Image 1: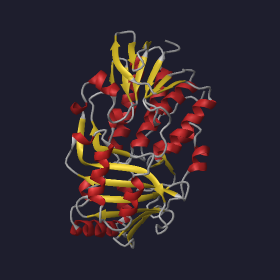
Image 2 (image 1 turned 180 degrees about the vertical axis):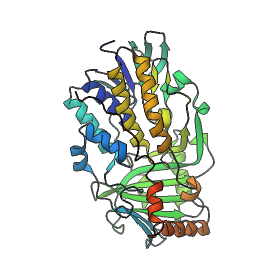
Image 3 (image 1 turned 90 degrees about the horizontal axis):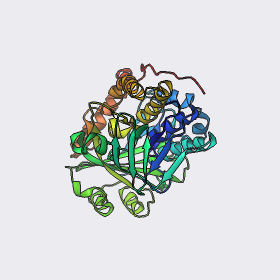
Image 4 (image 1 turned 180 degrees about the horizontal axis):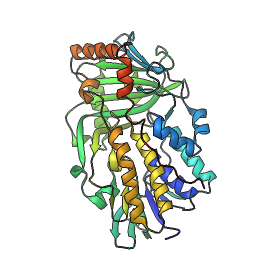
Length: 402
């Protein structure tokens, strides 16, 4: 198995990172992506600690710095847009909600795609996905949505929270998914004139909702970020009209820029909505099928480490496959052994989870702001930095540059 045939399901950060590192190791993977083209937009993601080191080792940092945003911290605002409390990036040493290096998910993914092209390319198939898997001791027979059937030595499922690869190889989603009490939505919109440049502005609305506006690389646009505290509603899955009705119900009359956000939502071309959920699996591989990113260890956007886990996992998985090209099962075992400690530290939710993020009452909102002011005081700030630095001591493995 000197040149293993590898299928990657999912063209997101994790899937493209593992495909790129495999290609650089001389292994040209096949990537299938259900979408018909690269997905633009997406929320801002940060690179710090291990994920920043991975980006440096993968040679991505020069391109990232050309697209990184000038974001200076988080400001919580009242109904009229007046600042209540600030969490500036410098005071928290870049370890708070805003890091030194911030880039939109879409821009980071495009950088990975550009690197794949410049490295010689992979067999990339948009509008394609896995519909069936049948494996034996020597490989995996894969049936694709197009009707094609092909055999691979390894299959990597990097197809997200609702992974079809996981369902086919491990079992139904409900066996591994824990609902965390709400939903989040993201989309790109024009930047309102009244919003303070360079700051991620957040506003809480009684009834368990919050709306934020986060700067883009282009100052003319920003990312709307909506959090809604709610019981689980399976009917919302893939029903964009129902999702947007729920958002309108919760944001209507919510003050600040809520009305502007709702008006922009109808025009958004990159509208995203999904439940907040955590994925827990006893193992990340089943025979010759292995999971990566949210499909394996989603901690939800509440944890804020999805991209860090995806790009770090892709780097390690590719490194282990290349190092053990004659023993794929050993490679998958090593990947899990090395990644488990990082994942365990990366999935911690902020204190209070969604209840603290989207209080039901004005009293709860004021209490949250008071607690934030306390944690930003000179006395408490070192403790807060320590709480936000749990992954800093991770010993990232290093693989030969090829």
